[in-house]
Image 1 (cartoon, one colour):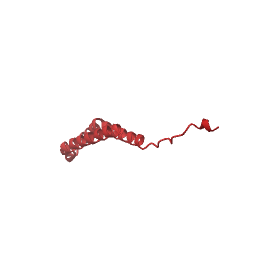
Image 2 (cartoon, one colour):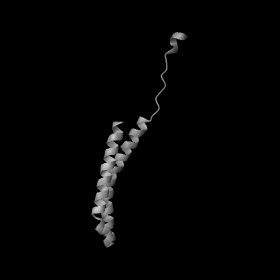
Image 3 (spheres, one colour):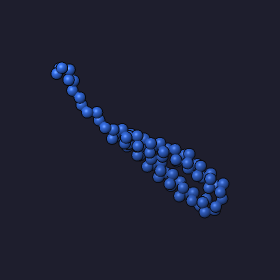
Image 4 (cartoon, one colour):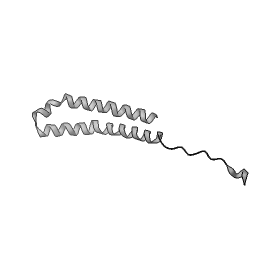
Length: 81
């Protein structure tokens, strides 16, 4: 459960920060210079994409661990043999 919370927070906050950065430098996309666009996308991919991906991976790992089926409780039947 803690992994899901931490992963969700990381993914949400990094994703919002990345989106804000892209909107903030949106004027570069209007100019159409391919070098500037590729530079911005690389920066966003490294500094925004990696932590967001890590947060998503933590959330999905926590979700898989939370949904993991429990082993049925088995009694020791040695007393019946």
